[in-house]
Amino acid sequence: MRTFAARRLIFGSAFLILAAAILFADSALSVLMYPVAHISGYGLLGMCVFLALYNVRKKLTFLPLGRSALWLQFHIYIGLLTGVVFAVHIGFRIPNGTFEVFLALAYLAVFLSGVAGLILSRIIPPRLASRGEEVIFERIPVFVRRLREEVEGLVMQCITEADTSAVPTFYVDNLKPFFDRPRHYWSHLVHSTRPLHRILTDLEAQHRYLNDTELGLVEQIEDRVRTKDDLDYHYAMQRTLKSWMFIHIPLTYSLLVLAVFHVILVHAFAGGL
Image 1: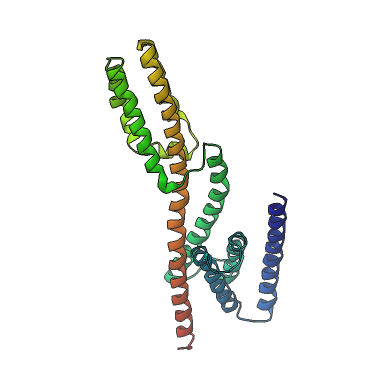
Image 2: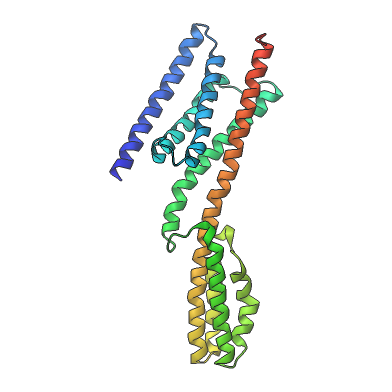
């Protein structure tokens, strides 16, 4: 924890120093009539290319390219620093021209999605740790199926051992949809336990009509309902993280394509081509 705090202090301080240096250089170069827009534009493009390389680094784990944690820190703070360079590049004003506005919106989409991802990566892991054991996302459907089979087995016991249809009827009407697939995505996303409380309340309301054998089986079903709810929680949180990546990464590559096209247009109209 101390190492993480020290690393955050170092990178945070470096970010503030570089941000101040960029703003000072912008002011000084403007006075000297240097082409600040060109310099900042190429700098911004280079930073975006470096940021895109982080996704490549994650896939090439077998190469000695440095620790992923260190790459992540550079990715975060350089990503934030692009906000300063971008503001300098557009002269702290709304861009002129349809393409320039579209390019600026593309950058803002990448930047804001990156900030959103940073927030999610800080919020979600602690929440996952508070809800049962760590579960691999791709294995969640397997665990859900096993739970459903166990519950259906308990329901069959109610029929064969207790000779009653009360629990099977309740299962078909109320629990089967719950165990068929991950449920209550949005409730889990806002950390709400209302759906679980509602299901358990409905189950507890059946206790008065059950004999001892049925009551024991229903209590086992309730345990599996809680386990299923934990799996749904993990599914919702992990799916959110994965969905964010499917948004942020394509936006990043789209921005790079637009930025290269922007450079070509600038040189073309400047007589460079």
